[in-house]
Image 1 (cartoon, rainbow, N blue to C red):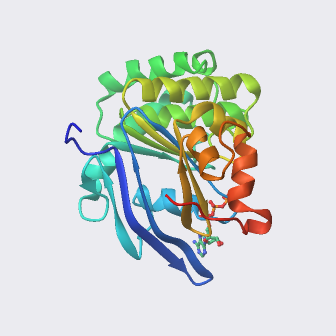
Image 2 (image 1 turned 90 degrees about the vertical axis):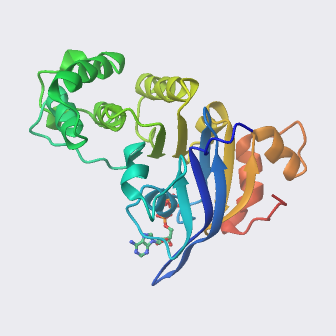
Length: 256
Ligand SMILES: Nc1ncnc2c1ncn2[C@@H]1O[C@H](COP(=O)(O)OP(=O)(O)OP(=O)(O)O)[C@@H](O)[C@H]1O
């Protein structure tokens, strides 16, 4: 233990909507250099959890700490070091990609002299630089997704929260985004992402958390999850996941 605060620590996070309990007493920690995949069936509470971590939705109970800063009591310090990429990110269609990134950088108080070369670096890296003269309204879904990712990286966050970042991307774009996320964690950042694509979680994540009806029912590496459901050494993540969440969301809990 180094004693430095974890990139992300959730303790007892809860949220209730009029339709029922969306997130219940959720606690987990994400370490530096770790990509943590949050899995769950539709309506399990993944987006609600990410929105509470990002400070966009107030929890009913519990706390979220980002590098030691409470999102509830010190939201600015926490938000400065994280980025949230929703599943339908908003871009400004009448801006070009470099203009969009410089605009986002401006919101973070980054001067244009710093933002412009950083925007170029990100756009070259994600193979969008050749499209720099086009308005973003003409971009394909994959191009928009990559630009949104660049926008999330422009203020050099150390924690990234991504809601379904690979949905709808073709193989080449998905590979680029996966490579970008791996490079981000290899450089010491931390990532929490949600996905319904089990192969993505299996390939990309260091640890996996499975939530069912707003509660964490299992977490660990794929090997640990296999052991927890009694499939030591075998079974795909899909097999393990379906065992945990069960048909119609009635799965079983394992000891965490
Ligand atoms: N703003 C809201 N008002 C009322 N209920 C909500 C709101 N947002 C989410 N919910 C409810 O909270 C529960 C969890 O929703 P959430 O979007 O977090 O699930 P999810 O795991 O992200 O699902 P999906 O995989 O389908 O995106 C669902 O029952 C949903 O209907």
